[in-house]
Image (cartoon, rainbow, N blue to C red; front, side):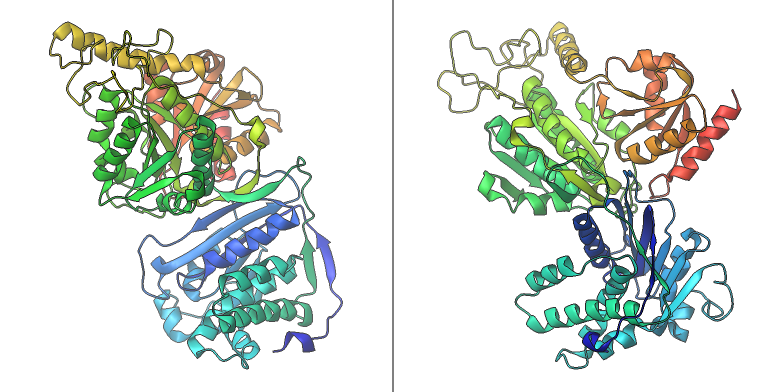
Length: 619
Protein backbone atom coordinates (compact mmCIF):
# COMPACT_ATOMS: atom_id res chain seq x y z
CA UNK A 1 0.00 0.00 0.00
CA UNK A 2 1.41 3.41 -0.95
CA UNK A 3 0.63 6.14 1.55
CA UNK A 4 0.56 8.80 -1.16
CA UNK A 5 -2.30 7.09 -3.06
CA UNK A 6 -4.71 6.96 -0.16
CA UNK A 7 -7.50 9.50 -0.18
CA UNK A 8 -8.54 10.77 3.24
CA UNK A 9 -12.11 10.26 4.42
CA UNK A 10 -14.07 12.39 6.85
CA UNK A 11 -13.81 11.16 10.44
CA UNK A 12 -15.32 12.38 13.65
CA UNK A 13 -12.84 13.69 16.24
CA UNK A 14 -13.64 13.02 19.89
CA UNK A 15 -11.94 14.93 22.70
CA UNK A 16 -10.69 12.85 25.64
CA UNK A 17 -9.15 13.78 29.00
CA UNK A 18 -6.77 10.82 29.20
CA UNK A 19 -6.03 7.54 27.49
CA UNK A 20 -4.08 4.44 28.46
CA UNK A 21 -2.62 2.33 25.63
CA UNK A 22 -0.83 -0.99 26.02
CA UNK A 23 1.29 -2.33 23.17
CA UNK A 24 1.85 -6.07 23.50
CA UNK A 25 3.46 -8.79 21.46
CA UNK A 26 6.25 -11.31 21.42
CA UNK A 27 9.53 -10.17 22.95
CA UNK A 28 10.94 -9.93 19.41
CA UNK A 29 8.10 -7.75 18.09
CA UNK A 30 9.64 -4.45 19.20
CA UNK A 31 6.93 -3.48 21.65
CA UNK A 32 9.31 -1.59 23.96
CA UNK A 33 10.54 0.44 21.00
CA UNK A 34 6.99 1.08 19.81
CA UNK A 35 5.89 2.24 23.24
CA UNK A 36 8.95 4.41 23.68
CA UNK A 37 8.36 6.14 20.34
CA UNK A 38 4.70 6.77 21.17
CA UNK A 39 5.80 8.14 24.56
CA UNK A 40 8.41 10.48 23.07
CA UNK A 41 5.91 11.87 20.56
CA UNK A 42 3.32 12.28 23.31
CA UNK A 43 5.83 14.23 25.38
CA UNK A 44 6.48 16.52 22.42
CA UNK A 45 2.72 17.07 22.01
CA UNK A 46 2.65 18.34 25.59
CA UNK A 47 0.56 15.77 27.44
CA UNK A 48 1.40 14.69 30.94
CA UNK A 49 2.32 11.00 30.86
CA UNK A 50 3.55 7.98 32.78
CA UNK A 51 4.76 4.65 31.43
CA UNK A 52 5.06 1.02 32.49
CA UNK A 53 7.39 -1.15 30.41
CA UNK A 54 6.88 -4.84 31.22
CA UNK A 55 9.07 -7.41 29.54
CA UNK A 56 9.89 -11.10 30.02
CA UNK A 57 12.14 -12.15 32.87
CA UNK A 58 13.75 -14.81 30.68
CA UNK A 59 16.42 -13.61 28.27
CA UNK A 60 14.63 -15.25 25.32
CA UNK A 61 11.46 -17.14 26.04
CA UNK A 62 10.09 -19.33 23.19
CA UNK A 63 8.50 -17.22 20.44
CA UNK A 64 4.74 -17.03 20.70
CA UNK A 65 4.64 -18.41 24.26
CA UNK A 66 2.89 -16.79 27.21
CA UNK A 67 6.15 -16.20 29.16
CA UNK A 68 7.56 -14.47 26.07
CA UNK A 69 4.99 -11.67 25.99
CA UNK A 70 6.38 -8.14 26.19
CA UNK A 71 4.26 -5.04 26.77
CA UNK A 72 4.57 -1.29 27.16
CA UNK A 73 1.80 0.77 28.74
CA UNK A 74 1.56 4.55 28.46
CA UNK A 75 -1.00 6.77 30.15
CA UNK A 76 -1.26 10.29 28.70
CA UNK A 77 -3.52 13.10 29.74
CA UNK A 78 -4.50 16.74 29.46
CA UNK A 79 -4.19 17.04 33.24
CA UNK A 80 -1.70 16.01 35.90
CA UNK A 81 -1.30 12.24 36.32
CA UNK A 82 0.99 10.15 38.52
CA UNK A 83 0.64 6.55 37.30
CA UNK A 84 0.70 4.61 34.01
CA UNK A 85 -2.99 3.84 34.47
CA UNK A 86 -4.82 0.97 36.13
CA UNK A 87 -6.32 -0.59 33.00
CA UNK A 88 -5.63 0.04 29.32
CA UNK A 89 -8.36 1.69 27.24
CA UNK A 90 -6.62 0.34 24.16
CA UNK A 91 -4.83 -2.98 23.74
CA UNK A 92 -2.65 -3.67 20.72
CA UNK A 93 -2.10 -7.46 20.53
CA UNK A 94 0.40 -8.61 17.96
CA UNK A 95 -0.20 -12.34 18.56
CA UNK A 96 -2.54 -14.74 20.44
CA UNK A 97 -0.21 -15.01 23.46
CA UNK A 98 -0.21 -11.23 23.90
CA UNK A 99 -4.00 -11.25 23.70
CA UNK A 100 -4.36 -13.98 26.30
CA UNK A 101 -1.95 -12.40 28.78
CA UNK A 102 -3.26 -8.84 28.52
CA UNK A 103 -6.97 -9.11 27.71
CA UNK A 104 -8.06 -9.48 31.37
CA UNK A 105 -6.77 -5.95 32.02
CA UNK A 106 -8.58 -4.24 29.12
CA UNK A 107 -11.54 -2.11 30.21
CA UNK A 108 -14.92 -3.36 29.09
CA UNK A 109 -15.81 -1.58 25.84
CA UNK A 110 -12.15 -0.83 25.22
CA UNK A 111 -10.45 -0.82 21.84
CA UNK A 112 -8.73 -4.07 20.87
CA UNK A 113 -6.46 -3.99 17.83
CA UNK A 114 -5.19 -7.42 16.75
CA UNK A 115 -2.77 -8.51 14.08
CA UNK A 116 -4.89 -11.19 12.39
CA UNK A 117 -1.89 -12.54 10.46
CA UNK A 118 -0.44 -14.02 13.63
CA UNK A 119 -3.59 -15.90 14.64
CA UNK A 120 -2.46 -19.13 13.04
CA UNK A 121 -3.25 -22.60 14.30
CA UNK A 122 0.29 -22.99 15.67
CA UNK A 123 0.26 -19.66 17.52
CA UNK A 124 -3.20 -20.32 18.96
CA UNK A 125 -1.95 -23.66 20.23
CA UNK A 126 1.15 -22.04 21.83
CA UNK A 127 -1.10 -19.58 23.63
CA UNK A 128 -3.38 -22.36 24.89
CA UNK A 129 -6.46 -21.38 22.88
CA UNK A 130 -8.79 -24.24 21.93
CA UNK A 131 -10.79 -22.00 19.61
CA UNK A 132 -9.89 -18.81 17.77
CA UNK A 133 -10.98 -15.90 19.99
CA UNK A 134 -11.43 -13.74 16.89
CA UNK A 135 -14.20 -16.08 15.75
CA UNK A 136 -15.79 -17.63 18.83
CA UNK A 137 -17.54 -14.55 20.19
CA UNK A 138 -15.44 -14.31 23.34
CA UNK A 139 -14.40 -10.73 22.49
CA UNK A 140 -17.94 -9.41 22.17
CA UNK A 141 -17.62 -6.89 25.00
CA UNK A 142 -14.75 -5.04 23.31
CA UNK A 143 -14.47 -2.89 20.18
CA UNK A 144 -12.37 -5.25 18.10
CA UNK A 145 -10.40 -4.11 15.06
CA UNK A 146 -8.98 -7.00 13.07
CA UNK A 147 -6.11 -5.78 10.92
CA UNK A 148 -3.70 -7.95 8.86
CA UNK A 149 -0.76 -5.86 10.07
CA UNK A 150 1.99 -8.13 8.72
CA UNK A 151 0.40 -8.38 5.26
CA UNK A 152 -0.18 -4.62 5.05
CA UNK A 153 3.38 -3.92 6.17
CA UNK A 154 4.87 -6.22 3.55
CA UNK A 155 2.71 -4.62 0.89
CA UNK A 156 3.89 -1.15 1.87
CA UNK A 157 7.52 -2.30 1.66
CA UNK A 158 7.29 -4.28 -1.59
CA UNK A 159 9.68 -1.90 -3.38
CA UNK A 160 12.26 -1.74 -0.59
CA UNK A 161 15.19 -4.08 -1.12
CA UNK A 162 15.52 -5.73 2.28
CA UNK A 163 15.13 -9.41 3.27
CA UNK A 164 11.57 -10.64 3.84
CA UNK A 165 12.31 -11.30 7.52
CA UNK A 166 13.47 -7.74 8.10
CA UNK A 167 10.44 -6.37 6.29
CA UNK A 168 8.19 -8.41 8.60
CA UNK A 169 9.92 -6.88 11.62
CA UNK A 170 8.69 -3.43 10.56
CA UNK A 171 5.12 -4.38 11.49
CA UNK A 172 5.52 -2.70 14.89
CA UNK A 173 6.00 0.63 13.08
CA UNK A 174 2.79 0.00 11.12
CA UNK A 175 0.95 -0.49 14.43
CA UNK A 176 2.63 2.66 15.76
CA UNK A 177 1.51 4.68 12.73
CA UNK A 178 -2.05 3.46 13.16
CA UNK A 179 -2.04 4.53 16.84
CA UNK A 180 -0.61 7.90 15.82
CA UNK A 181 -3.58 8.41 13.51
CA UNK A 182 -6.11 7.15 16.03
CA UNK A 183 -4.86 9.57 18.73
CA UNK A 184 -3.92 12.49 16.51
CA UNK A 185 -0.15 12.36 17.03
CA UNK A 186 2.40 13.85 14.59
CA UNK A 187 4.92 11.61 12.85
CA UNK A 188 7.91 13.94 12.69
CA UNK A 189 9.54 12.90 15.98
CA UNK A 190 9.59 9.26 14.93
CA UNK A 191 10.81 10.12 11.44
CA UNK A 192 13.78 11.97 12.91
CA UNK A 193 14.54 9.12 15.30
CA UNK A 194 14.49 6.57 12.46
CA UNK A 195 16.83 8.65 10.32
CA UNK A 196 19.30 9.00 13.19
CA UNK A 197 19.07 5.41 14.42
CA UNK A 198 19.46 3.82 10.99
CA UNK A 199 21.72 6.42 9.41
CA UNK A 200 24.17 3.70 8.37
CA UNK A 201 21.43 1.51 6.87
CA UNK A 202 19.25 3.66 4.58
CA UNK A 203 17.15 0.72 3.40
CA UNK A 204 16.04 -0.12 6.94
CA UNK A 205 15.38 3.55 7.63
CA UNK A 206 13.25 3.76 4.49
CA UNK A 207 11.36 0.59 5.41
CA UNK A 208 10.51 1.74 8.93
CA UNK A 209 9.49 5.19 7.67
CA UNK A 210 7.19 3.66 5.07
CA UNK A 211 5.69 1.32 7.65
CA UNK A 212 4.79 4.23 9.96
CA UNK A 213 3.27 6.13 7.05
CA UNK A 214 1.33 3.08 5.91
CA UNK A 215 -0.13 2.53 9.38
CA UNK A 216 -1.16 6.17 9.63
CA UNK A 217 -2.66 6.14 6.14
CA UNK A 218 -4.55 2.93 6.87
CA UNK A 219 -6.27 4.59 9.82
CA UNK A 220 -7.11 7.60 7.71
CA UNK A 221 -8.36 5.73 4.66
CA UNK A 222 -10.13 2.67 5.96
CA UNK A 223 -13.83 2.84 6.80
CA UNK A 224 -13.13 0.63 9.82
CA UNK A 225 -12.47 3.63 12.09
CA UNK A 226 -15.26 6.20 12.16
CA UNK A 227 -13.76 8.20 15.01
CA UNK A 228 -10.35 9.25 16.06
CA UNK A 229 -9.40 10.94 19.27
CA UNK A 230 -7.60 13.97 20.57
CA UNK A 231 -6.04 14.56 24.00
CA UNK A 232 -5.03 18.20 24.22
CA UNK A 233 -1.79 19.34 25.80
CA UNK A 234 -1.69 19.58 29.57
CA UNK A 235 -1.53 22.89 31.41
CA UNK A 236 1.89 22.58 32.98
CA UNK A 237 4.27 24.96 34.67
CA UNK A 238 6.34 26.87 32.09
CA UNK A 239 9.84 25.58 31.56
CA UNK A 240 12.02 23.28 29.51
CA UNK A 241 10.96 19.66 29.82
CA UNK A 242 12.31 16.33 28.67
CA UNK A 243 11.02 12.82 28.99
CA UNK A 244 13.12 10.90 31.50
CA UNK A 245 13.23 7.39 32.97
CA UNK A 246 14.18 6.78 36.56
CA UNK A 247 17.53 5.28 35.62
CA UNK A 248 18.33 8.24 33.35
CA UNK A 249 17.37 10.71 36.08
CA UNK A 250 19.48 8.77 38.59
CA UNK A 251 22.55 8.97 36.38
CA UNK A 252 22.02 12.64 35.57
CA UNK A 253 21.49 13.37 39.27
CA UNK A 254 24.80 11.79 40.20
CA UNK A 255 26.56 13.79 37.49
CA UNK A 256 24.92 16.93 38.86
CA UNK A 257 26.11 16.00 42.37
CA UNK A 258 29.64 15.71 41.01
CA UNK A 259 29.40 19.19 39.50
CA UNK A 260 27.82 20.70 42.60
CA UNK A 261 30.51 19.21 44.85
CA UNK A 262 33.24 20.02 42.34
CA UNK A 263 34.54 16.47 42.67
CA UNK A 264 34.91 13.84 39.92
CA UNK A 265 32.48 10.93 39.91
CA UNK A 266 33.67 7.31 39.83
CA UNK A 267 31.07 4.62 39.16
CA UNK A 268 31.93 0.93 39.44
CA UNK A 269 29.39 -1.80 38.85
CA UNK A 270 28.75 -5.29 37.59
CA UNK A 271 25.92 -5.49 34.99
CA UNK A 272 22.60 -6.52 36.49
CA UNK A 273 18.96 -5.91 35.57
CA UNK A 274 17.39 -3.41 36.12
CA UNK A 275 20.38 -1.29 37.21
CA UNK A 276 22.56 -1.68 34.10
CA UNK A 277 21.14 1.39 32.33
CA UNK A 278 22.81 3.60 34.95
CA UNK A 279 26.22 2.33 33.84
CA UNK A 280 25.26 2.80 30.19
CA UNK A 281 24.14 6.38 30.80
CA UNK A 282 27.10 7.40 32.95
CA UNK A 283 29.62 5.92 30.50
CA UNK A 284 28.47 8.47 27.91
CA UNK A 285 29.42 11.48 30.03
CA UNK A 286 33.19 11.51 30.18
CA UNK A 287 32.91 15.20 29.29
CA UNK A 288 31.84 15.80 32.90
CA UNK A 289 34.83 13.93 34.28
CA UNK A 290 32.81 10.79 34.96
CA UNK A 291 34.85 7.60 35.17
CA UNK A 292 33.05 4.28 34.80
CA UNK A 293 34.39 0.82 35.55
CA UNK A 294 32.70 -2.47 34.67
CA UNK A 295 34.08 -4.79 37.34
CA UNK A 296 34.39 -8.57 37.22
CA UNK A 297 31.87 -8.98 40.04
CA UNK A 298 29.89 -7.06 42.65
CA UNK A 299 32.57 -7.30 45.33
CA UNK A 300 35.22 -5.82 43.05
CA UNK A 301 32.84 -3.03 42.06
CA UNK A 302 32.04 -1.86 45.57
CA UNK A 303 35.67 -2.16 46.69
CA UNK A 304 36.78 -0.05 43.71
CA UNK A 305 34.21 2.59 44.66
CA UNK A 306 35.48 2.59 48.26
CA UNK A 307 39.01 3.06 46.95
CA UNK A 308 37.85 5.97 44.83
CA UNK A 309 36.20 7.55 47.88
CA UNK A 310 39.42 7.12 49.84
CA UNK A 311 41.21 8.98 47.04
CA UNK A 312 38.79 11.91 47.11
CA UNK A 313 36.36 10.99 44.33
CA UNK A 314 32.61 10.70 44.69
CA UNK A 315 32.62 6.91 45.02
CA UNK A 316 29.51 5.26 43.61
CA UNK A 317 28.47 1.68 42.95
CA UNK A 318 25.18 0.26 41.68
CA UNK A 319 23.38 -3.05 41.60
CA UNK A 320 20.10 -4.84 42.23
CA UNK A 321 18.94 -7.04 45.14
CA UNK A 322 21.26 -10.08 44.97
CA UNK A 323 24.16 -7.80 44.11
CA UNK A 324 23.53 -5.77 47.26
CA UNK A 325 23.90 -8.97 49.27
CA UNK A 326 27.29 -9.61 47.66
CA UNK A 327 28.41 -6.08 48.46
CA UNK A 328 27.41 -6.31 52.12
CA UNK A 329 30.82 -7.03 53.63
CA UNK A 330 32.46 -4.23 51.69
CA UNK A 331 29.69 -1.82 52.73
CA UNK A 332 30.66 -2.74 56.27
CA UNK A 333 34.21 -1.73 55.40
CA UNK A 334 32.90 1.68 54.31
CA UNK A 335 30.99 1.92 57.59
CA UNK A 336 34.14 1.15 59.58
CA UNK A 337 36.42 3.42 57.53
CA UNK A 338 33.72 6.14 57.56
CA UNK A 339 34.16 7.04 53.90
CA UNK A 340 31.45 8.70 51.79
CA UNK A 341 30.12 5.93 49.57
CA UNK A 342 26.79 5.81 47.69
CA UNK A 343 25.32 2.40 46.84
CA UNK A 344 22.45 2.27 44.32
CA UNK A 345 20.07 -0.66 44.70
CA UNK A 346 17.44 -0.84 41.94
CA UNK A 347 15.15 -3.38 43.58
CA UNK A 348 13.65 -6.25 41.60
CA UNK A 349 11.27 -9.06 42.42
CA UNK A 350 12.09 -12.23 44.26
CA UNK A 351 14.99 -13.78 46.15
CA UNK A 352 18.00 -15.10 44.23
CA UNK A 353 17.53 -14.51 40.48
CA UNK A 354 13.77 -14.17 41.07
CA UNK A 355 11.93 -12.17 38.41
CA UNK A 356 14.66 -9.72 37.38
CA UNK A 357 12.56 -7.58 35.03
CA UNK A 358 9.70 -7.13 37.51
CA UNK A 359 9.43 -4.57 40.31
CA UNK A 360 9.37 -4.99 44.08
CA UNK A 361 10.34 -3.11 47.27
CA UNK A 362 11.63 -6.03 49.29
CA UNK A 363 15.24 -4.93 49.90
CA UNK A 364 14.37 -2.43 52.61
CA UNK A 365 15.35 -4.64 55.54
CA UNK A 366 18.45 -5.78 53.66
CA UNK A 367 19.45 -2.13 53.20
CA UNK A 368 18.75 -1.40 56.85
CA UNK A 369 20.25 -4.46 58.52
CA UNK A 370 21.81 -6.74 55.91
CA UNK A 371 25.31 -6.59 57.35
CA UNK A 372 27.07 -8.20 60.27
CA UNK A 373 27.18 -6.44 63.61
CA UNK A 374 25.70 -2.99 64.26
CA UNK A 375 26.37 -1.33 60.93
CA UNK A 376 24.20 1.75 60.41
CA UNK A 377 23.94 3.42 56.99
CA UNK A 378 21.71 6.14 55.61
CA UNK A 379 18.84 4.94 53.38
CA UNK A 380 17.01 7.21 50.92
CA UNK A 381 14.39 6.36 48.26
CA UNK A 382 13.13 8.47 45.33
CA UNK A 383 9.38 8.73 44.82
CA UNK A 384 9.08 9.09 41.03
CA UNK A 385 11.28 8.84 37.93
CA UNK A 386 11.93 12.61 38.02
CA UNK A 387 12.56 12.55 41.78
CA UNK A 388 15.47 10.18 41.15
CA UNK A 389 17.44 13.26 40.05
CA UNK A 390 16.81 15.08 43.32
CA UNK A 391 17.49 12.14 45.60
CA UNK A 392 20.70 11.20 43.77
CA UNK A 393 22.09 14.63 44.64
CA UNK A 394 20.79 14.29 48.19
CA UNK A 395 22.52 10.92 48.60
CA UNK A 396 25.93 12.45 47.94
CA UNK A 397 25.20 15.57 49.99
CA UNK A 398 24.59 13.39 53.05
CA UNK A 399 27.42 10.95 52.28
CA UNK A 400 30.08 13.65 52.01
CA UNK A 401 28.82 15.86 54.84
CA UNK A 402 28.60 13.02 57.35
CA UNK A 403 31.31 10.71 55.94
CA UNK A 404 28.93 7.78 55.84
CA UNK A 405 27.68 5.19 53.31
CA UNK A 406 24.27 5.97 51.81
CA UNK A 407 22.05 3.34 50.18
CA UNK A 408 19.86 4.75 47.40
CA UNK A 409 16.80 2.47 47.03
CA UNK A 410 15.21 2.74 43.62
CA UNK A 411 13.06 -0.02 42.08
CA UNK A 412 12.27 -1.55 38.72
CA UNK A 413 9.08 0.46 38.29
CA UNK A 414 10.93 3.76 38.76
CA UNK A 415 13.98 2.63 36.79
CA UNK A 416 12.12 1.79 33.57
CA UNK A 417 9.11 4.08 33.94
CA UNK A 418 9.15 7.57 32.44
CA UNK A 419 7.53 10.94 32.96
CA UNK A 420 8.07 14.56 31.87
CA UNK A 421 10.82 16.25 33.86
CA UNK A 422 11.21 19.99 34.14
CA UNK A 423 14.92 20.59 33.74
CA UNK A 424 16.00 22.74 36.70
CA UNK A 425 18.20 25.78 36.38
CA UNK A 426 21.73 25.23 37.63
CA UNK A 427 21.30 28.14 40.03
CA UNK A 428 18.40 26.41 41.77
CA UNK A 429 20.42 23.31 42.67
CA UNK A 430 21.90 23.07 46.17
CA UNK A 431 25.68 23.35 46.07
CA UNK A 432 27.50 21.49 48.80
CA UNK A 433 31.12 21.95 49.68
CA UNK A 434 33.41 18.98 50.02
CA UNK A 435 36.15 19.69 52.53
CA UNK A 436 39.45 17.84 52.66
CA UNK A 437 41.69 18.00 55.67
CA UNK A 438 45.05 19.48 54.64
CA UNK A 439 46.43 20.91 57.89
CA UNK A 440 48.62 18.38 59.74
CA UNK A 441 48.50 20.48 62.90
CA UNK A 442 46.31 18.65 65.42
CA UNK A 443 45.25 16.04 62.87
CA UNK A 444 43.75 12.80 64.04
CA UNK A 445 42.01 10.55 61.50
CA UNK A 446 38.98 10.00 63.76
CA UNK A 447 38.78 13.46 65.26
CA UNK A 448 35.13 14.34 64.74
CA UNK A 449 33.18 17.43 63.80
CA UNK A 450 31.16 18.27 66.91
CA UNK A 451 27.94 18.81 64.97
CA UNK A 452 27.96 16.08 62.33
CA UNK A 453 30.32 13.61 64.06
CA UNK A 454 32.02 13.26 60.66
CA UNK A 455 35.70 12.39 60.72
CA UNK A 456 38.09 14.39 58.47
CA UNK A 457 38.40 13.36 54.81
CA UNK A 458 42.17 13.20 54.36
CA UNK A 459 43.10 11.90 50.95
CA UNK A 460 46.26 9.84 50.44
CA UNK A 461 49.37 11.78 49.56
CA UNK A 462 48.57 14.78 51.72
CA UNK A 463 51.79 15.59 53.63
CA UNK A 464 51.58 14.95 57.34
CA UNK A 465 48.18 13.25 57.16
CA UNK A 466 49.35 9.67 56.77
CA UNK A 467 46.91 7.38 58.58
CA UNK A 468 45.66 3.84 58.77
CA UNK A 469 42.26 2.61 57.58
CA UNK A 470 40.82 -0.88 57.46
CA UNK A 471 38.09 -3.10 58.84
CA UNK A 472 39.47 -3.70 62.32
CA UNK A 473 37.98 -1.51 65.04
CA UNK A 474 39.62 1.89 65.42
CA UNK A 475 40.67 3.90 68.39
CA UNK A 476 38.12 6.67 68.59
CA UNK A 477 40.70 9.41 68.00
CA UNK A 478 43.94 8.08 66.52
CA UNK A 479 42.39 5.43 64.26
CA UNK A 480 44.91 2.90 65.50
CA UNK A 481 43.75 -0.71 65.89
CA UNK A 482 41.93 -1.08 69.18
CA UNK A 483 40.42 -4.09 70.94
CA UNK A 484 39.57 -2.11 74.05
CA UNK A 485 35.96 -3.01 75.08
CA UNK A 486 35.10 0.52 76.16
CA UNK A 487 36.43 1.96 72.92
CA UNK A 488 34.37 -0.51 70.87
CA UNK A 489 31.24 0.47 72.78
CA UNK A 490 32.06 4.15 72.16
CA UNK A 491 32.72 3.69 68.44
CA UNK A 492 29.55 1.65 67.97
CA UNK A 493 27.56 4.38 69.67
CA UNK A 494 29.23 7.13 67.63
CA UNK A 495 28.50 5.41 64.30
CA UNK A 496 24.84 5.05 65.28
CA UNK A 497 24.58 8.59 66.63
CA UNK A 498 26.09 10.04 63.45
CA UNK A 499 23.33 8.50 61.30
CA UNK A 500 20.64 9.44 63.84
CA UNK A 501 21.70 13.12 63.81
CA UNK A 502 20.99 13.31 60.10
CA UNK A 503 17.28 13.49 61.03
CA UNK A 504 17.99 17.15 61.91
CA UNK A 505 19.38 17.79 58.43
CA UNK A 506 16.57 16.38 56.26
CA UNK A 507 13.16 17.89 55.56
CA UNK A 508 10.17 17.05 57.72
CA UNK A 509 7.71 14.76 55.97
CA UNK A 510 4.65 16.53 54.58
CA UNK A 511 1.11 15.28 55.01
CA UNK A 512 -1.02 15.14 51.88
CA UNK A 513 -4.47 16.06 53.15
CA UNK A 514 -5.53 17.07 56.65
CA UNK A 515 -2.90 16.87 59.43
CA UNK A 516 -5.14 14.54 61.46
CA UNK A 517 -8.07 12.25 60.80
CA UNK A 518 -9.34 8.68 60.61
CA UNK A 519 -6.69 7.05 58.43
CA UNK A 520 -3.11 7.80 57.41
CA UNK A 521 -1.71 5.86 54.45
CA UNK A 522 2.08 5.57 54.55
CA UNK A 523 4.19 4.69 51.52
CA UNK A 524 7.72 4.90 50.19
CA UNK A 525 9.58 4.66 46.89
CA UNK A 526 7.75 4.12 43.61
CA UNK A 527 4.31 3.70 45.21
CA UNK A 528 3.96 7.49 45.54
CA UNK A 529 1.78 8.04 42.47
CA UNK A 530 -0.72 5.28 43.14
CA UNK A 531 -1.07 5.99 46.89
CA UNK A 532 -1.44 9.75 46.49
CA UNK A 533 -4.00 9.36 43.70
CA UNK A 534 -5.99 6.77 45.68
CA UNK A 535 -6.04 8.93 48.81
CA UNK A 536 -7.18 11.95 46.82
CA UNK A 537 -9.97 9.90 45.26
CA UNK A 538 -11.27 8.68 48.63
CA UNK A 539 -10.89 12.08 50.25
CA UNK A 540 -12.97 13.61 47.46
CA UNK A 541 -15.81 11.41 48.73
CA UNK A 542 -15.59 13.07 52.14
CA UNK A 543 -13.41 10.57 54.00
CA UNK A 544 -10.86 11.80 56.57
CA UNK A 545 -7.91 10.13 54.89
CA UNK A 546 -4.40 11.53 54.43
CA UNK A 547 -1.05 10.17 53.29
CA UNK A 548 2.65 10.62 53.86
CA UNK A 549 5.38 9.44 51.55
CA UNK A 550 8.81 8.66 52.97
CA UNK A 551 11.90 9.49 50.89
CA UNK A 552 14.17 9.15 53.93
CA UNK A 553 14.04 5.72 55.55
CA UNK A 554 17.08 5.85 57.82
CA UNK A 555 16.85 8.02 59.72
CA UNK A 556 13.13 8.68 59.48
CA UNK A 557 12.03 12.34 59.31
CA UNK A 558 11.99 13.84 62.80
CA UNK A 559 8.24 14.63 62.75
CA UNK A 560 7.04 11.21 61.60
CA UNK A 561 6.24 9.93 65.09
CA UNK A 562 4.02 12.94 65.87
CA UNK A 563 2.11 12.57 62.61
CA UNK A 564 1.43 8.86 63.16
CA UNK A 565 -0.17 9.63 66.54
CA UNK A 566 -2.72 12.03 65.02
CA UNK A 567 -4.66 9.35 63.14
CA UNK A 568 -6.96 6.60 64.40
CA UNK A 569 -5.48 4.07 62.01
CA UNK A 570 -2.25 3.80 60.04
CA UNK A 571 -2.07 1.73 56.84
CA UNK A 572 1.33 1.00 55.30
CA UNK A 573 1.13 0.10 51.59
CA UNK A 574 4.27 -1.39 50.03
CA UNK A 575 5.40 -3.93 47.44
CA UNK A 576 6.79 -6.47 49.93
CA UNK A 577 5.42 -8.49 52.80
CA UNK A 578 5.30 -5.61 55.25
CA UNK A 579 8.87 -4.45 55.86
CA UNK A 580 8.19 -0.75 56.44
CA UNK A 581 5.15 -1.65 58.54
CA UNK A 582 7.47 -3.77 60.70
CA UNK A 583 9.86 -0.84 61.19
CA UNK A 584 7.10 1.64 62.02
CA UNK A 585 5.51 -0.70 64.53
CA UNK A 586 8.91 -1.25 66.18
CA UNK A 587 10.10 2.35 66.17
CA UNK A 588 6.88 4.15 67.11
CA UNK A 589 4.80 1.46 68.86
CA UNK A 590 1.97 2.18 66.44
CA UNK A 591 -0.43 -0.63 65.53
CA UNK A 592 0.13 -0.09 61.82
CA UNK A 593 -1.82 -2.21 59.37
CA UNK A 594 0.04 -3.65 56.42
CA UNK A 595 -1.23 -3.71 52.86
CA UNK A 596 1.33 -5.82 51.04
CA UNK A 597 1.51 -6.80 47.39
CA UNK A 598 4.18 -9.05 45.89
CA UNK A 599 3.22 -9.78 42.28
CA UNK A 600 6.01 -8.06 40.37
CA UNK A 601 3.59 -5.29 39.40
CA UNK A 602 3.00 -1.81 40.86
CA UNK A 603 -0.10 -0.90 42.84
CA UNK A 604 -3.23 0.04 40.95
CA UNK A 605 -5.15 3.04 42.22
CA UNK A 606 -8.39 1.04 42.34
CA UNK A 607 -7.03 -1.71 44.58
CA UNK A 608 -5.65 0.87 47.02
CA UNK A 609 -9.00 2.66 47.07
CA UNK A 610 -10.71 -0.64 47.86
CA UNK A 611 -8.33 -1.41 50.74
CA UNK A 612 -8.66 2.12 52.18
CA UNK A 613 -12.44 1.83 52.12
CA UNK A 614 -12.24 -1.54 53.86
CA UNK A 615 -10.16 -0.06 56.69
CA UNK A 616 -12.47 2.96 57.02
CA UNK A 617 -15.45 0.61 57.33
CA UNK A 618 -13.94 -0.87 60.49
CA UNK A 619 -13.78 2.47 62.33
